[in-house]
Image 1 (cartoon, rainbow, N blue to C red):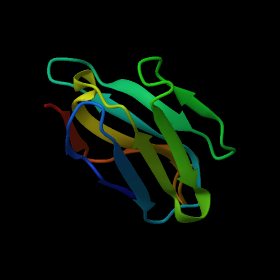
Image 2: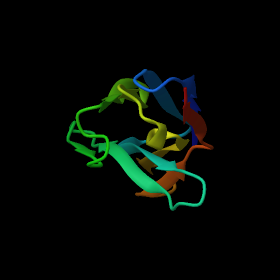
Image 3: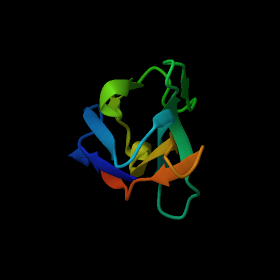
Length: 119
């Protein structure tokens, strides 16, 4: 299973970006999908997750500014990021908990996409 991310880039403070991630491969079911981020010198942290039933969870730092969504039929998750701040700058990673023909539950990560917020 591979997670392919897109949508990162450079944006001014107050701007918006939309990240997208699609899971490809032999997939039986995708449980939770989500986004994490890691800034230089800091640990990777949760940004937002969404279950297959649509239940969402957000880090307090992004609540009200970011929105996560997914299309179960396409194994895709998106992160709409509005009112971006310089402290949102980081590499954003997609994560998926997946059932494959070989494993009931497996954990996959994307390679990451850079988000930079600067004037």
